[in-house]
Length: 263
Image (cartoon, rainbow, N blue to C red; front, side):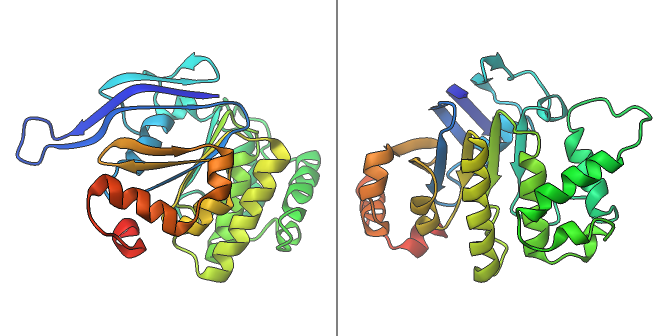
């Protein structure tokens, strides 16, 4: 469960570069919700993700995850109950470590690591089982350095690592945007499968409106730091890319196409 209430964030306040990134934003995700987020560049989508994960502090407002107020917790303290996959396939893994070493780190995320062995026989079998579900053959490459994997393989591994411990909230920050269409579709299907299998409460930012309609049970549209449109499950099933563009045009008071909205 995620509850965000009246959150604001302004960068460079009091200067000529002042920019309001979040403007009194409120949003609630119940357990098991999968909410997709769309909006124009500068709408505040990534700032929202950073505020939830603890990368940046909100100026005002409250953020609660599973009933805990996390506004004062830094990102490393939230790591045990927040999973995140970034747009850059290089960002979510350690390229100089092996696949099994990366998974061992993910397994211990947010907890003290001590001096115990990170990869044991039992954990190695667990890693193989989890990787087998990806259907990429990575279960046979546990000792391969992650830096040698393709972008799609790394992003699939990042997705698995972020969801490994079944976090209270999973954040997907345009996690298919840097991939070619074929690999993006693969990671999209893996996302749907993993989220449904584990019942993960998920917030996903995307510039792909078809993807935003395809995945999840709710959709929100952001503009200038605010949520300007929310669709529930029924409304989302009935929505189209054209209807979303139409709603955005009404709010902006201008004719837009998907390049305008998504650029």
